[in-house]
Amino acid sequence: MTRPPNAAAPLVEVSQVRKSYGSHEVLKGIDLTVYPGEVVALLGSSGSGKTTLLRCVNLLENPSSGRIAIDGSPIFDRAADGHDNARISGRDVAAMRSRVGMVFQQFNLFPHMNVLANVMEGPRTVLGEDDATNRARALDLLAKVGMSDFADRMPGRLSGGQKQRVSIARALNMRPSLMLFDEPTSALDPELVGEVLNTMITLAREGMTMLVVTHELGFALEVATRVVFLDQGAICAQGTPQEVLLHPTNERVRTFVNRFHATAELMRPLLQT
Amino acid sequence: MFDWSVITQNAHLFAWGLVVTLEYTVITCVLGLIIGLLIALVQLSPIKALRVVGRLFVEFFRNVPLLVWLLWSYYALPIFAGINISKQAAGILALSLYGGAYYAEILRAGIQSLDHGQADAAKALGMRSWQAMRRIILPQAFRQMIPPLAGQTIIQMKNTTLLSVLTVPDLLYQASYVSSFTYRPMEVYTVVGIIFLVILIPSNYLARRLEMNSQ
Ligand SMILES: Nc1ncnc2c1ncn2[C@@H]1O[C@H](COP(=O)(O)OP(=O)(O)O)[C@@H](O)[C@H]1O
Ligand SMILES: [Mg+2]
Image 1 (cartoon, rainbow over the protein chains, first blue to last red):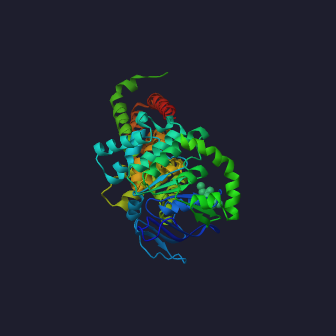
Image 2 (image 1 turned 180 degrees about the vertical axis):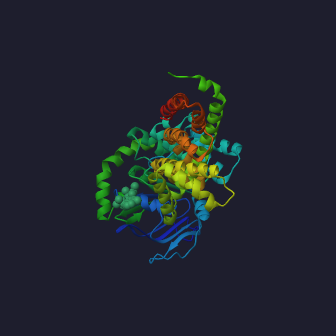
Image 3 (image 1 turned 90 degrees about the horizontal axis):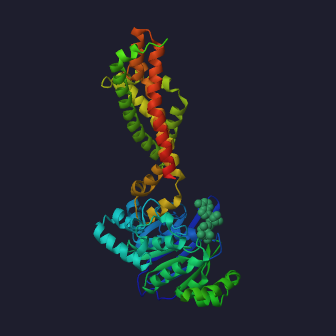
């Protein structure tokens, strides 16, 4: 991998995670470790289990079995026979989530609150932070994602790209040590993809640890420290973006990359703006 | 044909009856909403046994005629609840429970119709489920639910007239009392009908306005 395991304690440790919906096994024993500062791009064709894996990391979805630890704390541990080896309370799970930011494909902004209130909501409700500190930081974050002029807007009156930048600011305002992204640009008109990717690139360059499900191969090549390729619920290839994407040895990855080759070429100029 | 003097001479009885009707409408609506919210949350609980209880509650009240239920409560509830509850109070509780079942259905549907992404986003920030409910889910669900809740509240006001059979001195009870000694039921019940129309037609109009504003 890109870092020797003893350089730092892992931030995410997923081991032998399986997930079934009825008789359909969606994740087939996933092992994935993410170290602080890594930007891991999670790739794979539609239906390969990327979203499910990402949602298992912050337990929006409970695995059928396997172990998950975040920042050294075990947060899920269920044996193959369904026996829970660890009793983890709802409070512990919520506390873990408060340190893990998540950005959704459909933004999921709170439509009954304006942009600033959306960004302030997490610290206000979850941490009970006072409004003055919270507001100052929220405004800084809105400036950072280029949304300062929209603090008073309701989400319904924003473009998709603007919504996604607000949702990134909302997640960052909890000061997470890890950010999860689930296809953050897939619901956007092509001309709005760049503004969101640029925000994410800035974040990655600042050293944020990120686990990103994406179809933007340009982004993966540009900023990912590691690419993990999922196929039918199993990791079938991983390594540096150059290894995995430019010199794919795996047949699945080669097919996938060829299909996206044209798009990846098109992404390059966008990334430089 | 119409002799309006029976109305004017007994206006104070009608006025008093109207006050009681409005009072009971407010009480049974507030209690009904609280019961409804409780039952809606029970129906959405992750615990199956609770969901079944909630379902049974709603099905019971949707399928038993209100008048039958009220009469049964009038005679049976004070026995079950002990001597501390008056027959009128039993009637109010019965009507609140009945309304609660309908409010529960409205609230449950409103909460369930909300995009799952909203709960996901709230949980992902670290909210406990009650925090997500209070800050994210209910404020949005209530907004959508204002029109059906207003509609149910209007039905609830009309239903309070049934309390008169339990000797609650509401508008209808006063009317039948006036009618019993004036022998002018036509005038008396015409006035009762008009009073309800005068109150409820503007209320309906207001509910529709709210519906348009919430969209
Ligand atoms: N809640 C669910 N119930 C049943 N099947 C599901 C559910 N969520 C996802 N799946 C199935 O799991 C598989 C993987 O889904 P997903 O993780 O969304 O894939 P991806 O994000 O890679 O497109 C798909 O076949 C999908 O139909
Ligand atoms: Mg997906």
